[in-house]
Amino acid sequence: MAKIIVITSGKGGVGKTTTSAAFASGLALRGYRTVVIDFDVGLRNLDLIMGCERRVVYDLINVIQGEAKLQQALIKDKRCENLYVLPTSQTRDKDALTTEGVTAVMDELRKEFDYIVCDSPAGIESGALMALYHADEAIVVTNPEVSSVRDSDRILGILAARSRRAELGEEPVKEHLLLTRYSPKRVEDGEMLSLGDVKELLRTPLLGVIPESEVILQASNQGIPAIHMENSDVAEAYKDVVARFLGEERPLRFIQPVKVGFFKRLFGG
Amino acid sequence: MVNPGTESSAPLRVAGGVFTLSILHLESNNPQQLAQRIAEEYRRHPAAADFHRHAPVVLDLSAIPEEAPLALPEILEVLRAAHWFPVGLRNAAPGHQALAQALHLPVLRGQERNAAPQPETPPPAQTVPANPGGLIIDHPIRGGQRNYARGGDLVCLAAVNAGAEIMADGNIHVYGPLRGRALAGVNGQETARIFCMSLEAELVSVAGLYRTLEPGYPLWGKAAQIYSRDEQLHITALNL
Ligand SMILES: Nc1ncnc2c1ncn2[C@@H]1O[C@H](COP(=O)(O)OP(=O)(O)O)[C@@H](O)[C@H]1O
Ligand SMILES: [Mg+2]
Image (tube, rainbow over all chains, first blue to last red; front, top):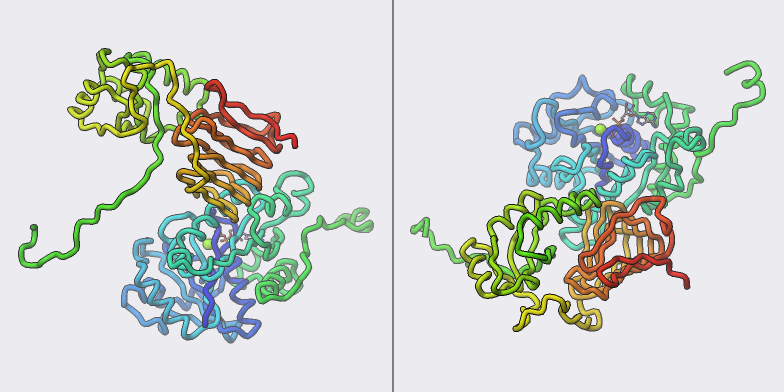
């Protein structure tokens, strides 16, 4: 039975799409049949981050409106054998998503895939509600700042009240906290909330910490999911996240400021 | 029937519901004085303006003598100008009830008006039954969520986060940090109290008396209780 995972946050620009691409790729690299869906109608970022924007012909909205078959809209990833992308439309508005339409798409995907990863838009309106409605598990992406933590708290409340599981009185959606854009140096300087602060405020099990890194920008400019950026901290951090999600134990990394070495200090870096 | 061709078998859906409303005790029959009192209150507690904005409110007329003339339309005007929504009257003398009916304002049943008006004595405190409407919550209450223990105590075994609101007719106990809003005795129970292990609340209220808090408050982050005495809200440390 497929598992549906929503990548959500309340706030925009925190790293949901970056995480959706990396996480879905990571699951596929582990051999799971995975599809990642863009719910951010009107913005359409996921296909860019996945590097498949030129191959978009039909999208989620076409499928929902009955203008294309699901098979026509699914784009096979060029790096991972088991991964498909279901892009969204840039020209339609959010009302094009209907509850019945999304449910029908989910039901069909469930038969084909092990994991369905839903990249949520920001906010708490209909688009975000559609993205989280079917979720079995939720990864709440949070940056170490007060406004992001507040919005994550809010979305956790909505998950507990407005998801399909909540409405049917089933076992609640399993919640995971993912702290992204974490800069240990700035935490040390008191410019950002610490990991401890965020955990204390949200009290949701931690799935991982992704450091702030320029590699993310390089990756998105090249259309490569960050998990493929060999030998980078972010790729390692996302691999740890996937491993923990699959039940493996991994110690937390990249949460201490990098000590500048003696020679580097002497000669500059 | 709108459509005589089809027979609609479903009955109209009318169901009971219970709502929490603020009760404003009218001090006099003078609308200007009311306007002035509200303005003073908002000046002293700017957060109060926000708290009451668009809040439905019931007017309690127990302090208004039967024979006093009542400029009800003007009073409603004052409330609306302050962004309150008057939704009914209670404890009104028969003459005042008739005025309300003429304005299509519901007359709600509350504690009944004393036969002889005794505005000075407060209504007798009700005794709380053994927590029949009590609510025990064992997960964090998130921003935007609201929980209400109607007719009893509310116990939260986890955090009440900023932007969350918990309400109880009885007492409130919070064993995680209390960071949101907590309102005890919302049906007027003045003996209700709030107990918390870490006071970081945005607002605390007992039986309609309330205050907002900020970091830097002396008992911030401490175990504390909040109660009302002599129409004053008291916050003291829980030194156990
Ligand atoms: N770990 C990171 N380090 C540096 N920049 C990041 C990181 N994660 C995301 N970003 C950047 O933040 C911006 C928003 O990311 P995105 O994934 O589109 O967020 P969302 O989908 O939540 O709006 C992008 O410019 C992205 O490159
Ligand atoms: Mg996005």
